[in-house]
Length: 312
Image (cartoon, rainbow, N blue to C red; front, side, top):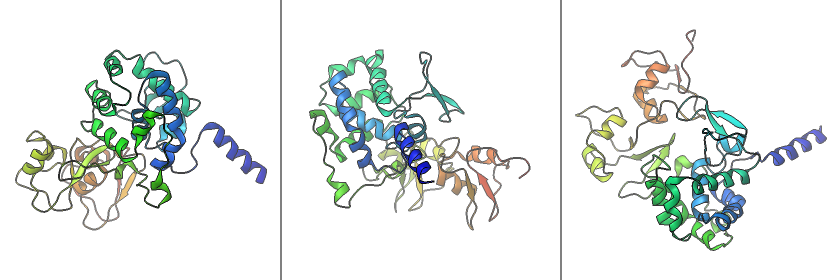
């Protein structure tokens, strides 16, 4: 039995499978050398590469990173002839690239930028100018998230990733003094204005405070007048209460892979569950074969990712 366990562990290491949840610090220490190597080869700032990898792979803990060594969420596209993996992202069972190891993923990410026509202007920037690179990536349409550049910059500055652009190997003191950050990207706080911004199910949100109104939050986050009410399924005439989650982007069609079902507790409504998991309210009703406006009973199972089977 011992021999089998040792063999399995070795096989996991060879495949690059992470047996434990990596913190941001662990991830940076493990892969920053690859980011520096790619910077020297292509001119892409190592800080940018690392920050993108942290966000896209949840510091190596995402399913794509664990099962396919895909650290940047790159889809197959028409020119990909290598191994693939099916993964549900914006659509069901989309095709994503699969790599033999993390180094291949980092190299393919570099090629994605180097060969992409719309990213060509970025290489006019200095490799040490991470802010221009971050904003340039957003301008070029690398991500649809309006806060993408801000997130990259905050990660770079929080973990001093800009030192990687000088070829410096980081000594992450945070990890040694017990002040390590949360390992879950859903807890990654962005210091934006008066209200910090977090993420749930890859949707940005903030938490309402006493005195907040949809009008004041709309002004602070520079939204259209209708956006916040629509994103949060809140009609006119109702204002946020302190402690209430306010999504700054549209909620998603399904919950994250970690949240497949929810058992209803006393006082919980479909709207509450929709807000808790960042799932659109109308989609939640549809998944559970319920009429809009109906409410569940205590102990009911609410399906968050798949449609409820007819016999349940």
